[in-house]
Length: 374
Image 1 (cartoon, one colour):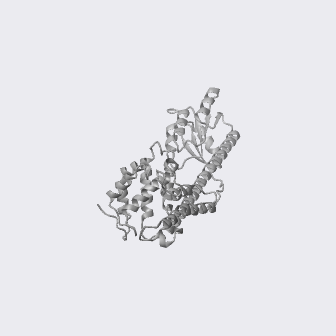
Image 2: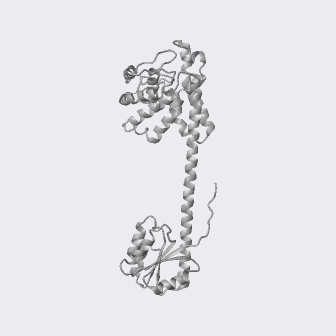
């Protein structure tokens, strides 16, 4: 990380005063130390401040024709581009109330005329040092914010690569799944967005969690890496013994993600939802699913959404053991699982966006897949 290094600079000072004598005196006093600009009234001062080359400090008279120094200061403080420029009042007004008013408006100092050159120079130097320190910290904070953003983007990229690398392992084992991973993650996001304001789901379906759902969905079948080919790719119905082995893909998937999570260490949260999906997406609302036979709300929300997305995509695509079902038939099958296989509210949400899901299916169908058109 490159550190910001403080570099001294030649400061510029804007002198605002209607007295030629004061302007001449101040210009002579400051010329060897600072760059100076002159404005003989408040209106000209504000015009000068519209230029890109802003002064580092302003010496401002209070009593001037037209706009007085108080009003000039108000305008300076209202402008985001000038509000941080330190302003020192130079005035013949010596009353406590006048000084109090100036400081309350935002002036950093209040010097009465006749001006003592050593005092003025000392105070200008001090206020410029304070401004430099503030500017340095502001620049450093911006630099650090950029570095944090950069590191955050790197972490997100690592998360994405980790998930897709793991997901691709499962996809290579089953040549018929095609774009199943891409389609199901989009279905899940569509359903989640439909449910995000639902009383039962809004506590979980935050924008951040919906994004994690989208990223984690591709890992739902990662455990199939551990299922033998003669079972995973069998073109006929599985025997009870083979189905028992197939069911273990949920446990294998959960354990694979858990192992990856433990190796990563502190960066854990982005895989929590992935574990839930991999382990519980085959659970059924009525309790007849696997691996634990969970019922109702005991099934993680992430897995309930994944269950609908996974079944819908399996129905509308050709598999080695079945033809592709038409979209309408697939929707009816999902509907028949209302309160039995699936969470009723998740089914309701799916039915409202089922046409969008079918559009996704057509858009991301593989050449070797047969997704039936209407």
